[in-house]
Amino acid sequence: MNMPFEYEYTNAYNAAANPSTMHAYNTGLARMFRRYLTQKAISTIIIDGQPETWENNYLMYGLFLWGHLAVIEVSRYGVIPQWCTLAGFNVYRQPTQALIANPVFRRSYRLHIGDECEIIKLSPDYGGIYDLISYYADLMAITTETMGVNILNSKLSYVFAAKNKSSAESFKKLFDKVASGEPAAVIDKDLMMDDGSVSWQY
Picture 1 (tube, rainbow, N blue to C red):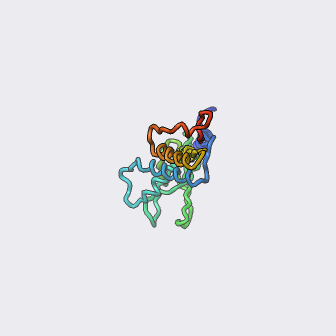
Picture 2 (picture 1 turned 135 degrees about the vertical axis):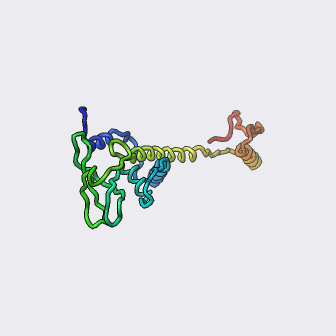
Picture 3 (picture 1 turned 90 degrees about the vertical axis):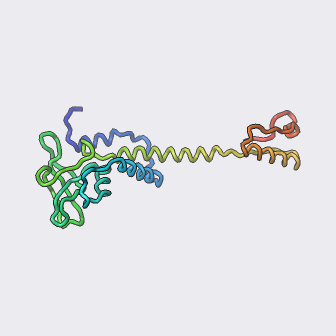
């Protein structure tokens, strides 16, 4: 592929190139891990000098998930960050406009970056890390399900073939010893089959 690309094309290309062979979408377990990884990522950064009037959750979730925010001045609210869509491109293939539509505002905004607003971005391509979060959340969900199935399957049950009530009681005591974790359990040869094989199976 020939460079340069516009930022929209770069984002679309990177999204398609990310590993996508396994997905656990729309499961509560995957959503739980996406939430956990998002909060884990956000907790690693503290923005120094952030205005006290800015809602921290809005700012951090916007940066990490959306990837960028526009800083604008609104008469009613002052200078605030807003989620936005980027548009246009300059000679360096960088966005030139921020499109803002907040239902609280009485109108939408189409602002020129550098003149009417500024952009805060998490990475050079203006993208967030939600693709990475989703990928690893899916793997964690699949791994957790696999662990649960394996733990369940590792709980083997024993079937004993007892010749009489006495041998049945002996087998119960034998199982108690094994289940309690004793490293060795001794049995009487009378508890074995006539051909010398054991009279129990998994």
